[in-house]
Length: 156
Length: 156
DNA sequence: AGCCTGTTGCGAATGCGTCTCAAGAGCATT
DNA sequence: AATGCTCTTGAGACGCATTCGCAACAGGCT
Image (tube, rainbow over all chains, first blue to last red; front, side):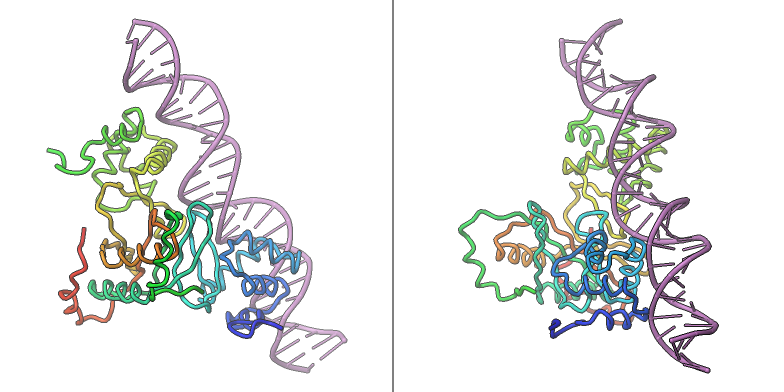
């Protein structure tokens, strides 16, 4: 009945973070598991309230914050000043943001990842985290036939 | 006497943005031209006040904001919640942030840029802007000999 | 020199996120 | 199922970066 993969269970997610399982946190965890986008705190709160209307803003922020610290949640700031969240157990990917519509597509490029490591290493560093975001607009149409010869892509 | 390249003159920068040249804005423009780091609004304000102590916080924010909108200034948010600024006419580069010290190094990789365009194109988009940030920590020492065989690098 | 209009400084306001604290609820135990 | 220790909660105050409102001020074209 639930998703057959990943942190399918909200309670597990919370326990993994070393948190007590409360109604409010269950609601929030559920929202994160069900989310197929990158909701911000306000959206997480609104959706969590559909499961349990008693969830407060403070609890939403606190829970998101703890889950991030524990590494179970990844954060993004595509638009300045609002933080967006996404479960960390999702496969790694970078983001392509349509600046006209705000739509966000995910992609991975093993080749870019490799070059990133190479660059970091050249400076004597190792990568702890990275952020790659492409802010794009729809190109002139009719030229989507390039799509197929790009083996280095995948969607999530 | 001035830098022989780029927007060497603050007045030009302001006029390019379609702004009246005022003492306060001259002070701010000068700060941006002289900056070799990525100052945030507070730092820009403090430095501008060394040139003209009458510069107010509101004017600093307003000027930075207009220059950004006009595309003459690029903004970054390495650490969440504070915006950092950098003149747009600087050669393009990405950033490597030392998570321990906060030090920021700049680099460019033509190869990564190429792959980015390829990916965007594959989805039918063209890149308007991008952001690539590597959050790193110093790797185990003694292995800096990799440094030389990486032709795809340059510092700014 | 004078006028029109863009700019300024001040302080108040906004917005996202965090903190305080007393009341409430997990959950390990009896 | 009752107990109790401790973590968690909701409500509102608070913090901080940034923006706004407005009356006084000052570019810069004539």
